[in-house]
Each structure stands twice: as C-alpha cells, then as structure tokens.
Length: 102
Image (cartoon, rainbow, N blue to C red; front, side, top):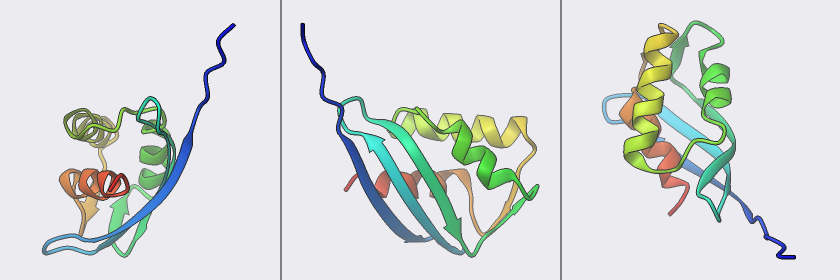
C-alpha cells in the first residue's frame, strides 16, 4: 500500500494593479498537484454584483495554478455571472494569485 502525502502550502501576495487598486490574495494550495485549496481575495477595488468575489473564490477551488488555465477560468466566471470590476481585471487577479507561488 502506498500512502500519498498531500502538502498544503499557505501564501499571500499584495499587488498594486497598474492604474487600479490594491489587491491582496490569501492562498492555500496543494503543492503536489498545484491546485487551489482555498482562496481569499480582498483589496480596495469594487466588484458588482456584491457577491462576485465570494463566487470567484468558490469557483476557483481546485483550479490548476497555471497562468493560461487560471485566466481562462476567471474570464469564464466573469462572463457567465456578468461581473464588473472597478480597479481590477482578470489579468491582474491572475497575476495576484500566481504571485503567491513565488
């Protein structure tokens, strides 16, 4: 019998979005499989509808931490849920998340 050890890493990043607002990411991820385990997104940006950030956090659980895959998933969530940002965009959110890996 082979026991597989799962390593959950915890990290955070702070990113000043160019021509935008401050973004803070708190990330827990499975280091073995490079998947998001838990995610908290905060900052001084605005998102509409009000529950947009919680929805994005929920939908990104178990997402693969690779730029191309992550940005495509974020764009899809934004489009399907008619999310609007002021001071933030999908590219900056992706960058903020991936900064946690460095």
